[in-house]
Amino acid sequence: MENKIPKNNPEVRAVQTQQKVTKILTRLICGLSALLAAELYGATQVVATKNQGLSARMDKAIDKAIGEKRIIGTVVVVLQDGKIVYRRAAGLADREVERPMQINEIFRLASISKPIVSVAALSLVDKGRLNLNDPVTKYLPDFKPQLANDGSPEITIQQLLTHTAGLSYCFLEPSDGPYHKAGVSDGLDKPGLSMDEELHRIISAGLAYVPGTKWRYSVALDVLGAVIEKVTKESLPEAVKKLVTEPAKMIDTGFAPPDRQRLAATYADGSPPVRMSDPYLLPFMDLAGISYSPQRTFNKDSFPSGGGGMNGTAEDIARFLEIVRIGGKDILKPTTAESMLKNQIGNLPIINGPGWGFGYGGAVLTDPKAAKTPQSVGTWSWGGAWGHSWFVDPKLRLVVVALTNTAVEGMAGQFPIDIRDAVYGKKSQ
Image (cartoon, rainbow, N blue to C red; front, top):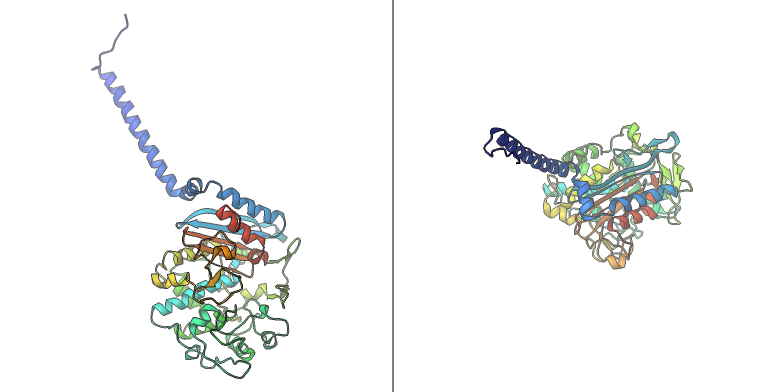
């Protein structure tokens, strides 16, 4: 006969109690572990649950560009709803010493400076210290570039912000164009050139068209930088730090010479890409080419170029773009941040081609079909001539930043297209 232990036996009760406690603790620990994992690895979970193939597609696009020797190295960051869903440093920061690219690599930003300086100006508008309809001459009385017929029409702050001010860039002109004859700097070259001298040269080059009648990419943000200095009575680097990078916690981004140990080397398109000399002239669009000076960032006498003189990291830029996307937290009023992602130039055509307008600091997608892109209407996007691209898709709550050390493939080559298509998981239309 089987021996039965009474249910009220103290030993049985003790074992049963221990089992219950163990189950409860196990469930509690599992629950806490899940919560902790969600907190620490939430980005990975977003990729797994919302977009199973994102990491694989992004890795493929990056590995292909490096394998085909179109870029030397890159840092790519993708945010969705403010969380990192993809982040990778790949390739080499400096090929000649075989230094691997790091997540916190510092890059010369070129035109990624523009949205940052645009936000600095717009924050002054929010504070009532600047008005979009103000004439530039209110702050720079001598800034009166003339048209070919000797007229000197008024230029407004709004026109500087939207590149409708009648100004130009050297790299968008033939070698005998007026900006070349005047010796204007595009903000990437001519180390040691002062702001006063740069403004003088821009004035002497004259206007390319009547302000407000066309869109033309230009040195307008350099002029705006000079305006910001007059309004704040501070240097542009100090003003941008106080108005933008400090409140945005962009600890590695600014005009000051960066930590050389973390500064990516610079390369130009080639098979394989070639390390830039100083100066370096890169052919572009069958015009005069883009003139670079890698050492400019270390020259304290160089004017702080609001259009191209900053340095920073991919994560800093992603953080900044996310702040604009969610309404300008601690930096801009929500309506002002929203205006950056709205087309401000009507039907004026821009360099991107059909389907794009221009907001503040970047282009705005108005017609994805015409632009042949999978991005959503309202996508805000631009790049940088050292080899960068970025975009914000407000509808899908996406921020994508791809910085490279290879010009201009990283800005205008196949790489930014492949990164874009990898994010959306489909080819352009």
